[in-house]
Image (cartoon, rainbow, N blue to C red; front, top):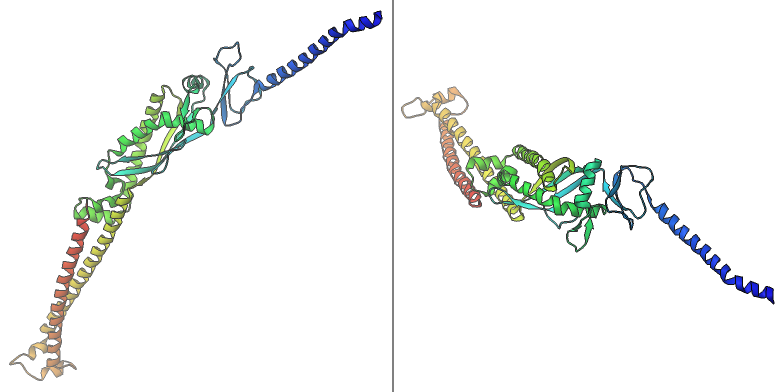
Length: 364
């Protein structure tokens, strides 16, 4: 009986030891998992800011992992802020809805024509460690609203988060710079055909109808250069530091309003009709002049002069196969053709002036 009682008195202690051992194994497993998760590394296109996140740690930046770093212990419960270390871009389109990294934008020219732009802003995030630390302090601890949604993301939360940051911070600077530069030129400087529907002189209309686009390309290149120069200063001034580098801007196209395009196409058709009428008029004048010259030749012919009253009647046969009477008839017919050609030229001239008047009546 005594031995059985001794077994019973040791049983609670044994169970306690078993439970403690099991708890230690579980805790060790949890601690091991957390420890394994406290190692981080980056790929070739990412640099990561590590912030302390432990219950007894401050929220300061612990370290910065460069691109393609090996697996590194970053501390338990630390927070990772990954940033792109590669070239980034922000697109401008003439129409559509704003999406992360894409801005649909239109702005007026100096003569009030609302134009859309096709352009791209290229840049890189400055990943030098002191600069990146300052950037994370300024913007990595905030969230930004995603265009068209109620969602808010941090700048380091993937492409959507970085695009939301661009829309909130960079977009106003870019739009203001574009508005200023586009306000220095008129529509015809961007697209020569605008002159066809504006108050223009005949010389300007002719230049617009036959323009090759070389002057327009020069204007776009000048705007592109001015915008790029301005953005290199304005963006980092707005950000409060040299956080973006390698800033470049490319302007590839200008989009006119739909109604203006339709009016330009109609004016081009009118101008083509007027040009054809003018060509017919010029040809008629040339034909009339040629007939007049032929008539003068007939009248200057000695045979024709001999057929006049008082001249000899038989000299025509000696001069050629046709007699004087036949040559005189040819001269009279040439005179009639000359008069007909002159009348036709006058009619074509009136038609050309009417077509030109219709073309000018479509101007702004």
